[in-house]
Amino acid sequence: MINCSRKSGHVFTPGYEEKLPEIISLMKALLEKHTGLQYIETILRYILNTADNIGVADLEGMVEENLSSTQGEVIMTLAEKIKQEGIQQGIQQGIQQGIQQGMQQGIRQGLLETIEMGIHLRFGAEGYRLLSSISQIEDINLLKAIKEAVKTVNTLDELRTIVEE
Image (cartoon, rainbow, N blue to C red; front, side, top):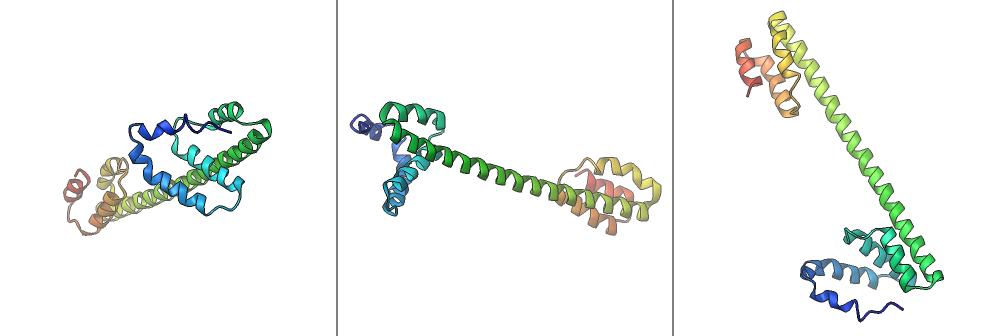
């Protein structure tokens, strides 16, 4: 059994009050569990998600020190499962970010091509000198504004003023 008396001093740790909402949330989650294994899994999730400086390897050392080998194996299996779930979640988030960035890049490229065609149709070869500045712009909203301006400005200087804003 883990010695709880030496762990109780943590209520006096600075910043403890800030952790109370998380601890209460943990208590609520524990009330919804039906087996000891579910309790342990909930606590492990809490530890691994809230303690920035504790990883599975750190937890393994603590488990070996405080539990029997059979109990430790169960806990480490759960910890590895939680770690794998975290890795999968990270992969999914990375994929979503990659898709989002790809979409933004596609929108940007489409806007640049539209602006190029509009400048060519409105101002001919003279307008191409402005394209090198426009192609450096990353801001999608500014590119949209330039695209609209290409339709309405009367001179290339008016368009240059918008591009240089």
